[in-house]
Length: 259
Ligand SMILES: [Zn+2]
Image (cartoon, rainbow, N blue to C red; front, top):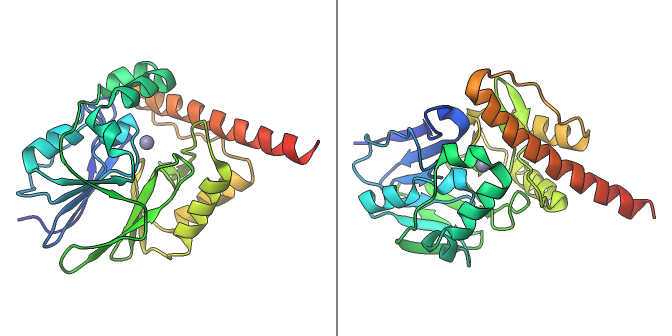
């Protein structure tokens, strides 16, 4: 039987740590995010899975969702009004191809998910047994982004950056709502988590949040992660997109403050 907290690489074979799913086992078991379709995710230790939380509907977070839900009959928690895009993922797949190009092919297409959906708006508290799961609305990376807080650990999806080789990285694709992104980041810092589960980076120290905030505010956000090989190529594609989001957000900010 499953117990405790698990960070599960759920990227493709070329770069398993490209994305993480997290599993918290209690009386009710919950998974946060569902990796890519061509996922190496090993969830075989789970005899049951009551909930899957989708932090947001990008291809690298919902790829294996339909397969997981078919197997475990899990209830899927998603921001209000967005379950329809999981039932018919045409838009998710189309947007991914436009934004990520070849990387979207490496990740694989998202299949339609038929599930019992629980749509949320933030502020809900769900009883897991010993622990409670609090849903936090964290827009910015996407308008429909949610994070979850369980037993002092924050699972921030893509709303608080990523981290590889000890280097914080931006997770800020266009169209970036920078104001909301920063507000969401500060809101999450105000929870004083004892650890942070990053969808792109795994479980990290909470000091990551301040480092990430500094990198965005200082505009010194270009990083050198140096993973090597295909992993480096995949990460570089994401970084290129995330830099673009920040550049656009800052240039519109600058032009509005200098008429
Ligand atoms: Zn992502």
